[in-house]
Amino acid sequence: MITLTLAGLMLAQEQPAGEPKISAGQAISKMIALYHEKKSMAGTIILRQTFGNVAVEVETRFQYERPSKLYIRQVKRASDPDQALVTSDGVRFTYDAPKATAAEGRRLTETVKQGIDVLDYQRIYAAASACLIDRSAPLDLAISRLEDLKYLRNQWASIDNMVERESGYIINGKWRAYGNASVSGSYQIGLSKDFELTQYQIVEPMTFPNQPTQNMVSEWKVNIKPDAAVDASLFRVVP
Image (cartoon, rainbow, N blue to C red; front, top):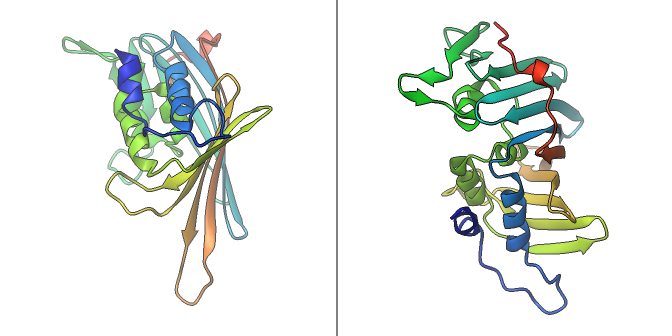
């Protein structure tokens, strides 16, 4: 059952007296379940990453429609602007060749049906994601591949506390780059009262020789809607 699978991703956590009636782990599980394999989904994710006086912004617009239609467009606004595009019309999917490969600069096209196998939107995302500028936790949560959810769960080294506000919930904890890595920062998850993801943040202290420690702050503002109406014109092959 998907409920049991998702519950297994989260830390068991007792709630101290005076804390919200729902635990942080339960709130995250409800958020994951909200996005899991919906009929369709659409929205935007905006990353703002800052380090000292340097700032980068990446805007992601995406949508999918089951079983095999997908659209992801990313635009990077910085001193070195960039963009990426993944599309699937349900028959073929196209994406930018990953950088630093022999095919860099080209658009690649593959068929959704590969032999006796038919790729769904999640597997198309996995196949094409190497070209993305911002492969983010919010995007992984929206696409909701179980492998990606497990990876995210392992990045959340702890769930330290949750604050309930009028607008929703703020969850804080320790963050690591992958499951066996040492803790290298902190994360914050913002949820609405309906457990929609509204904000995700990672703060990583960075230390360089002869310089004071500064924080790399990556913050994603999220507006993604399950079972949303999609723009069918975006599901097309872009050679």
